[in-house]
Length: 247
Image (cartoon, rainbow, N blue to C red; front, top):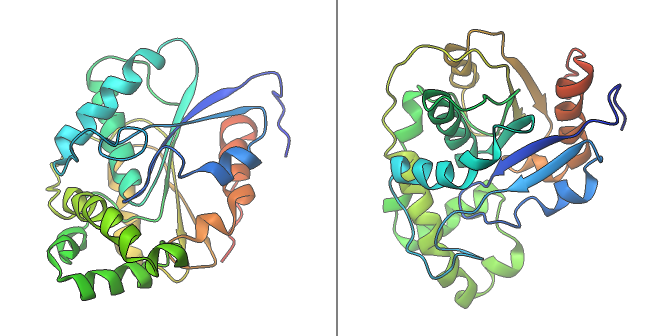
């Protein structure tokens, strides 16, 4: 991977998906070029903040992340990336940074989620499901490693974290506001359980044209194509080429 400004680097603040933690994007960090400095932010209640209570309110989650990031945005170019729950929160965090007069991100990268105004976001209350149904949902999302699904002890550890995170997303109520003037790239998997029109609702949130890209796979397609996702990010930040459709 290369770019025209190889001497320059950009911080990429990465927000984990539901159940994720500081180490969720290890495969991305291992494949990242020197021009992308990946910094994964932490949510409370998981490694390495395991002793802190879980947050199940989205405004509290955004405030927690804002406190982590606000001192790191004004002196170096940066972008924000989030997958699934992390995608929604990336958008809300960006709005909070702009409202508080911080230097805005160069770009917002979203994978695996519908636009914030999609009504479907709160239709399926997974955080209220009985355990068997809930675990089947986790299997269908193809996001939990087999060793976790086969271990009662590990499942018992991750279940409250996942439920809290799903509560954050599923109880989110969208507040209409003026579009932000920041480029957004949205990447989804061809086999994801979401409607195309709901994905395209991201266009309502920015005054620039959103680049919508598809890659083969289910919800966690990003881990089949870490280098390709990073290449898209790098191209957008440094080369400004038109996107490639992987579908």
